[in-house]
Image 1: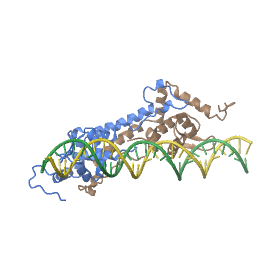
Image 2: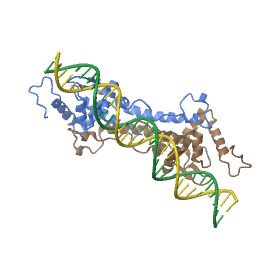
Image 3: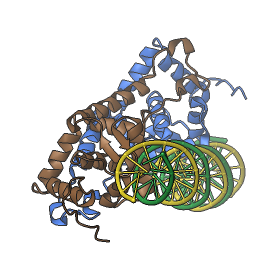
Image 4: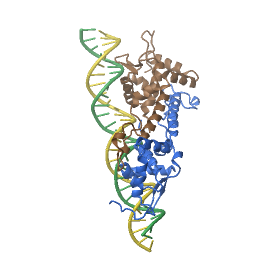
Length: 172
Length: 172
DNA sequence: CTCTTCTCGGATATTCAATGTCCGAGTTAT
DNA sequence: ATAACTCGGACATTGAATATCCGAGAAGAG
């Protein structure tokens, strides 16, 4: 069983976006996280399709969260990127072979599929308990309370505020 | 996220083996479940490596459970086939990019990895609650109490008992 | 005791999905 | 009106899961 690496990037991006007041271009997010830009864009599109982030085009465009970070759960992000397909897919083995079960008795999923589904539900419930705001708070605590501040400082350095007085020219 | 189909086959095989008093060859298990023999063999080897089933070679050989079905959990089977690798693998994004975190502060996993690990632990715990004996019981109940009896009848038809009086010649 | 038959075990091709990449459509500020 | 910058979907490539084969070994029959 393997979870797409895009899930990790998507979660990091959501935490990052929760600290910005302005749209952030995909290229900046990729630079910040040290991941290939084109592939990250693919994941951001998935987040956009799920209405977790909104995209703004044009010169000062980019991505921003559509809701407060406290109302976006880790499950939302995982489902948006990884899809809603269950990890375990029953192929109805009980209806195959010489001892095939009567299809009439197969109205509900087989016992094995039920057990796997129950476990998967426990996984989803745990993810639904965590919000992006929770994650941001913990990330900040892990860094000793400096991460979010540094993040916001980096934003104001890259996306020059519209009313920036003598805004610093980009280093490059 | 996707779980190998071998997990489904492995669980079905364990339930099946729990109803046999004698070793069952891989070819019979494949025929019974309607799955390709060579690939099923691969999964059975994984179960054997994990010491969930024991293999006997030779003419009356095959696979059998090494423990009572009530002492084998669904988690045991999943881990044996799918491996112990976590579904979410943290690539330490926090240590990359222009705002890389101080490695000194990265002694414990990042907040995102912790959240995903917690959810995965909930999944594992749910699987550990279910035993192969539970599954066999539920399968039997779903079929109206006929599945296990039919299974045992099929065993005695295919694996002629050593003391079988005038054992029925194979139909072919 | 020898031989035959049946079994498992690991090494080997093939298919499919996830990964990584590119170029065109659209929008905003100049 | 122009031009620059943005996102969005369509296109190769890599890797793992899938499917398969043949050889080693053991048990039983003769």
